Length: 358
Length: 258
Image 1 (cartoon, each protein chain N blue to C red):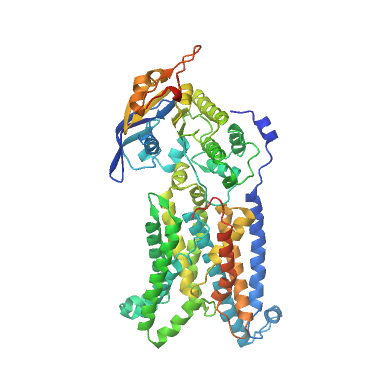
Image 2: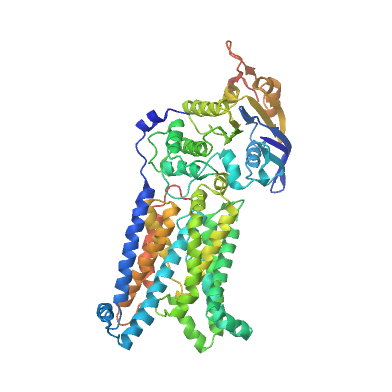
C-alpha cells in the first residue's frame, strides 16, 4: 500500500517491551531460586542448611531432628509459599485482565472470602456428609469446597456487574464488598456452630499463614494450583484482546465467552486452593501485577509468568519477615502483606491511569 | 456481504424491522440516516455484536456458522470509540491486529499501518495519552493490520467502520476516507456508518439511508441524495446542490429549514 522503505525511515524503532519482559523473566527466575535457598536456610531452630548440605556431600547421615526440620517443616513450607504466592499473583493478574481494571483482586472483591466460606463449611459441616464420601475425599474436601466457594462468588460477581456485555467496575467493587460481607457473616455463624477441635482448625483462617504447611496440604492443593497455572498462558492473548473491550476482542477472533469461562474457572481454582491451605493472604494479587505492568507493560503473555515468579518470591520474602520480626514467635503473613500492600493499593488509586474508569 | 431480514430488539424495543442489505466488494457502501435510525445498530448486527434475527453472509458464508477467528480473517471492525484498559503503547495496540484471524506475523505491517493513518512517530506513546481523534486512527491502524490485504486467496476482505471520521479534523477526514476508497479500489469492501453527508457524497459508491429502523432509500449518491428523500429522512427541509464542474451533490446547512 505504501512505500515501506520511506515509512520505516521516518519511524523511530518501536520500543520492544516484550523483549524487556523476557529478560525480566530470567532475572525473576534467578531471584526466586536465591530466595528459596535463603528460605530453606532460615528458621527458628538452629538447623543450618549449609552444614546439612556439607554432611550430605560428605556422605554422613543427617541427625533426625535436622532431617525433620529441613524436609518436613521447611521444605513443604517453601513449596507451599511458592504455590500460594504464584497462585495469588496470577489470579490477580487474570482477574484484572478479565475485569479490565488494575484494582480487581480475588482478595478485594470477595472471592477469597467466598473460598474461605467454602473451606470453613467443609471443616464444620463435614460431619453431615456420608462417611464414605468424606473418607474418599480426605484432605481434598477442604480444597474442593474452597474452590466451589471461590467459583460461585466469581460467577455471581461477574453476573451482577456485567450488563449488556459491559462490566461495571464500580458495581463489581461494591458487589464484592457485599459478597465478602455475606461470606464473612455466614463464616461467623459456622464458627459459632463449630466444636473445639474444629475451632482450632479455623483460627488460622483469619490470619493467613504458611505456618501450618505440611506435605499433605501441599499434595492436596498443589495439583489444583499447578493445573490452573498451566491454563493461564493460553488466556494471555485473549486477555490482551479483552483490553479493547469484549466486542473488539471478538472482532479480532477471540472466542470471548469461552475465554472468560476458562479465566473465571482458573481464578477460582487457584484462589480456592491457595485459600484452602494458607487462609486469606491479601494484596499479593494487586501489588505484583501492578509492579510488573509498570516495569514491562501490560502484555499478558509475559505478565502472567512473571507474576507467578514475582508472587512466589514476594510471598517467600514476606514469610521470612513474618518469621523473623518477633522470632521465635511468628507474625501472621497476612499482616506483613497487608502492611506492604495496602499503601500500594492506595497509591494506585491516587495516580489513577487515564484509561481507567471506576 | 449480504444481510437478510435483520431484526434487532434492544430491551423489548424493536430497533430494526427486517432489513435487507447487500454490499459489494470493490465499493464503499455508506450507511446514513438521522440519530436513532438504527444505522449503528445495523452495523453491530452485521459485525455480530448484537443478537439479531435474520442472516448475515460474508463472501457466501453464514457468519453464524464461522468460528471467531475465521470471521476475523475476513473482516475488521472499527467501533466509534475504544477505551483501552491498562497502559498499552500505540504500537502494542496496533500489533493486536496481527494476532487476529490468519493474519501473517509480518511485523512491519503495524508500522506501515500507522504511517497510513498519519501517526508515524506515535508508536511508543501511551494510547491513553492521545486525543480522541488520534485514538480513533490508532484503532483504524489496528483494524487495517488485521485485514491488510484487501483481497486474499481471491476472497475480498471487509472493513466495517462505525463513524470513522466523526472525531477527526477535516484533513484527517479526507485522509481516512481516501484510505477507505483505496481499499475498495484494490478489491476490498468497505461498509461505513456516516454522519457527514458531504463526505458521503464525495466518497460513497452506494448509499443506504435508514429511517426508524427501516431502509428508506438505497442507491448511488445521485439517487439517494435528493431534496425529497433527505427532507423526509431528516425531518427538515434540505436542498441538495451540485458544484458547476462536477456532479457531486453537496448540502449547505445554511439553506436548511426545520
